[in-house]
Length: 140
Image 1 (cartoon, rainbow, N blue to C red):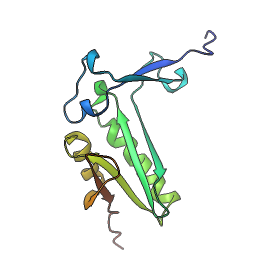
Image 2: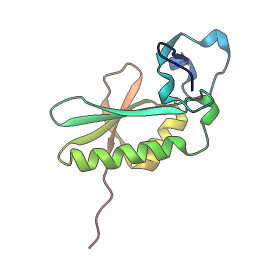
Image 3: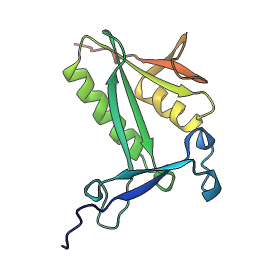
């Protein structure tokens, strides 16, 4: 392997334009973000990411992004399930939330399959709705 110091991969950020139906047109790219090549595969592919942030003393928010070429392969479900498991283990007392625009139908469906339900209250982000994770009941 050659020295890759200083090398970055530039990922397109499409933003709200992509909510719902994937839009691949280069003219819709709003900006690029730089990531280290270590987070991508050998071919430079970057599938997506998942993360969480403490929103309040009682809430932790999960968020995820998946590159359009990888939609429909269950990668989003796999990474979100892994993060949910980790959040439940590390923060058992916290409410797990997500924010999603209703028009982002793919993410909305995924969140509902994962156990999220609309809260009925507004979200912090304009145009998004707040969803709350409902842990599955434990039957003994």
